[in-house]
Amino acid sequence: MTEKTIFRKIIDREIPAKIVYEDDLCLAFEDINPRAPTHLIVIPKKEIRSVDDVTEQDEALVGHLFVAMGKIAAERGLSGGYRVVTNCGRDAGQEVMHLHFHMLAGRSFTWPPG
Ligand code: 5GP
Image (cartoon, rainbow, N blue to C red; front, side, top):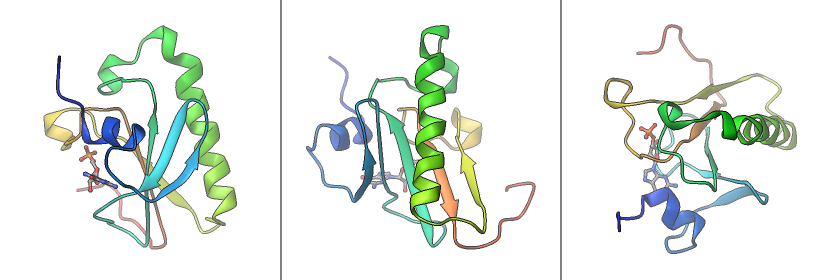
């Protein structure tokens, strides 16, 4: 059996996290090493390693994640704007092999990203 990822352990409540949103399909929590005043991680409960592993069966789930992010942004009043990022693979700096979206807000961001 493969070792659980950190995010799987957070879903299973084996390690603590500051959870800000949860429903049947997804979970959002504060990043442990925030890169902006607001830095949330949004994940599906289903185990998908990265964008590379998203299949047609996941279309509704991925849409659901974006609807959830919109709700979170509205609840938290992120009216100044925010950035949604997903890192896929080594060159993008993906560290945790469980599909996740970073929601970053509370400061301005440069483009292109580093
Ligand atoms: P990645 O580089 O894979 O796109 O992002 C992984 C993110 O997960 C990083 O921003 C990192 O700070 C965050 N992270 C790693 N371990 C933990 C943890 O145990 N708890 C929380 N809340 N975030 C974590």
